[in-house]
Image 1 (cartoon, rainbow, N blue to C red):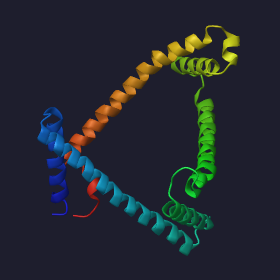
Image 2: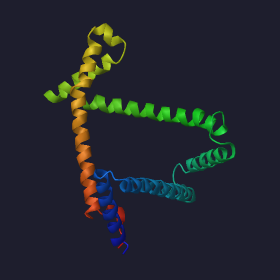
Image 3: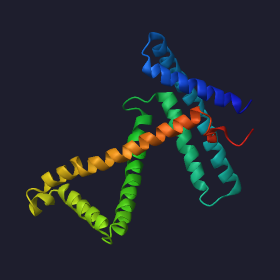
Image 4: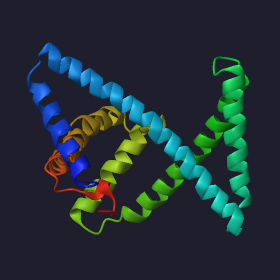
Length: 207
């Protein structure tokens, strides 16, 4: 029953959602809104479960004195302080919670994204080696786009911004559409496998 129940529920809800998409009846619209409301409720419970998992993970790190375990105390402190300030003073403008968000979290996010951009640039530098014709074309297009996105590009060639726009509008857009098409087909395939009971990874290992 632990496996048949979720499989049956996935089949019924999946088929019902597909049918209501093609039959815009008032009843199907109400059913769709009810499912969306149910998803919000389930998401709240999943958020509570995520908090529990986060606390369990960091408590184990502190108990076992895993390397860098003091950072778990910082995680707990930030978690408790942010929650207490948000509950006590609200989350509107000029509140302590908003000040912490703007002056601590936002700069930390900017720092992390800056490091990520550096690692991406480093990986791109190692990957862009003109060993084949395709790699050479990719390297040339990347150089043109990078030059066209900075002010010095217009000094290199007056038509550089227009060339960059053409590259982004046609070759880049064609590649993006191909990738998005593949992602969409993969999502449809995965959804059908879940509805039909072929994909059962979400059930876990229990019977």
